[in-house]
Length: 211
Image (cartoon, rainbow, N blue to C red):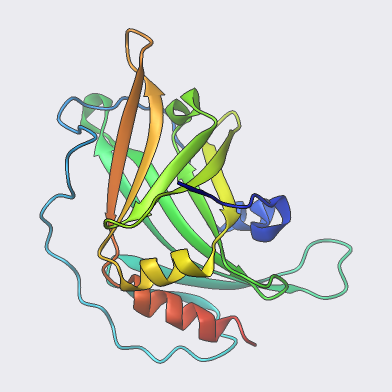
């Protein structure tokens, strides 16, 4: 398993959090969602053939992934930053049949950073372990640290070129984290996110960030 290099400045959590509104009020993993269960059969949305230009600002869907680009300027900074991300999320049915976040997947680029990074958003239940692992299809898994606040858990780190190419060419991104069950025993949870549209969204993000 390959460990990702952790960096707190790569993604800029403060800026990204303003773009991604994720509030996990409750988390209860239902019995029908087991770690060895693959992605559900779904009707996949089309991957739009859209020409994204450098300097693009706004949102654009590509299959199951959505590109979002913004210009961000923090107080006291002379020059703003360009921030783009492509994201997807997986939900499950929680108490009262309400949709509950199982994982939010974000691949992020900033014009002042040399490489893309990941920002995965997980429910508070994921704090049972200090790291998560993720893999694309049958490739070797990567390991990344996890940190939690009062509302959610965040996984962030630099994304190696090898992982980028696996994501662009792959079909399924699998994320594994640990939760405590009702008996306070560790339980592995696996979330499978289809990469339908990721390649197009990532390539569009690579163009958009160059302005």
